Image (cartoon, rainbow, N blue to C red; front, top):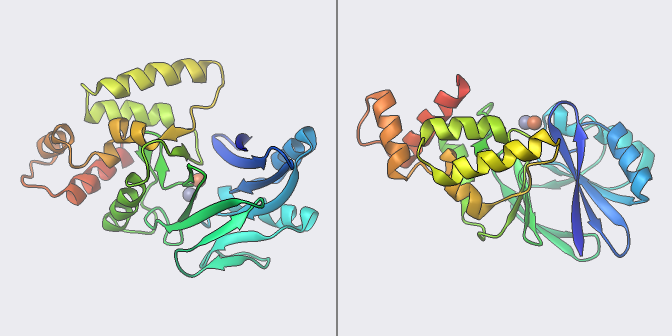
Length: 255
Ligand code: ZN
Ligand code: FE
């Protein structure tokens, strides 16, 4: 009953629009730009009923004020995201219901930023810049330990969870994933699939938790192939999974 549409913004951002197909009411996640959202709502005749934010970065929040001014809808935001408008804040992990009967769990996933949260409900995960397909967000504010714990939290969600990331980074991430694990068959297959999709300007998302467990090096710090590659690169032995994660992230930063 709930359908999700991508609204493209900037170079590679996705603003996800979740729609109740019966009522045509919708919410948007991380509107970094208002103009493409307004255009989309008009084209589809959807009624905006709320705005959800995952973290404070401008490419996820710059459209909030103009949309709030135009539609006067509630804004759900992390506790520490600076905003010039009133918002419903999450002091702790909790759940809330929107679009009449869509209940979202709020998950705290610090690492990319300290305020970062994710929304999980109806078998769908909106994870902003924490988890990408075959990748993860850069560590701008949090530590590797924090990000590792956040990713492990997401990894425990059901295998069939649809993963809606905020950027189209999949192909570049898969290139790195295959540098980490050259023999990862699932990653190679996914690369072919996504190359075809992207050649037709199609969206590579949503992914699933099951697929990410197979192809995402940042969810695979406990896999022998990944551990071996990182040990060889760093000349360190007996690395813990979080140390493997940390060195994988450092490598990706300059890949
Ligand atoms: Zn960000
Ligand atoms: Fe972003």
